[in-house]
Image 1 (cartoon, rainbow, N blue to C red):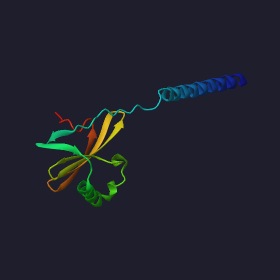
Image 2 (image 1 turned 120 degrees about the horizontal axis):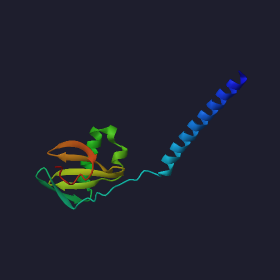
Image 3 (image 1 turned 90 degrees about the vertical axis):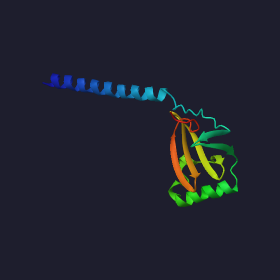
Image 4 (image 1 turned 45 degrees about the horizontal axis):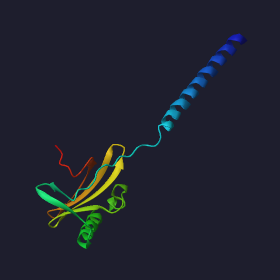
Length: 135
C-alpha cells in the first residue's frame, strides 16, 4: 500500500515538474523574442488630394491653433489622448484644415485625423498611409 502511494506521489511530482518546466520554456520563448517591433514608414507628403481638394502641408499657425482648440473644447474627453500626443501635422485647403497625428505600431503606421471642412469637424482614425486614397 505504501509502495503504491509513493509511486503515485512520485508520478504527481514528475507531472508537476514537467508542467512547470513547460510553462517556463513557453515564457522564455516569449521573452527571447524581444520587444515588439514598431513600424512607421509613412512619410507625410508636401501635398495630397482628398475629396476633390488639394491639401498642402503648412506650419501650424494661430488660425489653425484656434480651430483645433474649438475642436477640443467641443470634445474635452479627447484632450490629452495618447493617440493625439504632440504637435499635429497640418494640411490646409483654403479655409479648411486636416490635423494628423502619426504613430508607429506593430502593424505599421497608426493615424488620427481631425478634419475641419465646410465648417464642421470630423474625427477619423486608421492604419496605413492616410495620404494615399484607399481603393
